Length: 162
Image 1 (cartoon, rainbow, N blue to C red):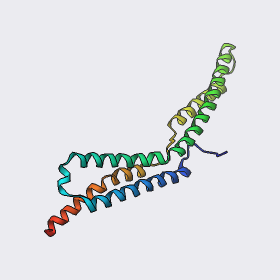
Image 2 (image 1 turned 120 degrees about the vertical axis):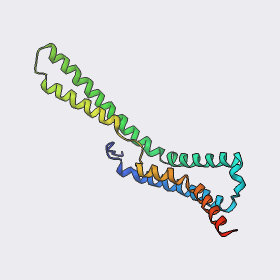
Image 3 (image 1 turned 180 degrees about the vertical axis):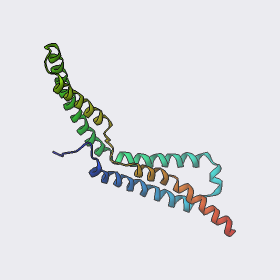
Image 4 (image 1 turned 90 degrees about the vertical axis):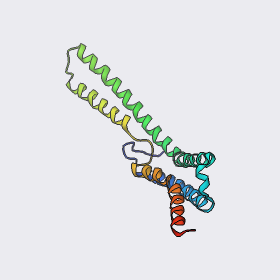
């Protein structure tokens, strides 16, 4: 069985980088096709924009769907950890209530309940997708590269008089 630390997804970021590479390869193909076939008149055609937006959405889907199995592994590990914490929290809470009713020492049990609650909150915040902000930024900026490349091509064409 695979041991995962839900608080450290760094070992899984390789899968995020792989997904980003797949998406960037798709964007590269999209850019090449636009550079080879683009006509300025296309900017005024609704179908061009619909196709471009669809291709941009497909790129984002490629990114997320290719790392979905890793997300599922991390989600399952997180869920298992949350079940264990909820079970322990419930047991400690009942022990606390029993000690309150018996006027016993509640300090150690109250500290345990508090620590378990903090841990439960930390688990809720744990990330289950193997990417970081830099990967997302790269993806979303790169989706704009095909448009930037055709605009650059047209500017160069205009400046050179072709």
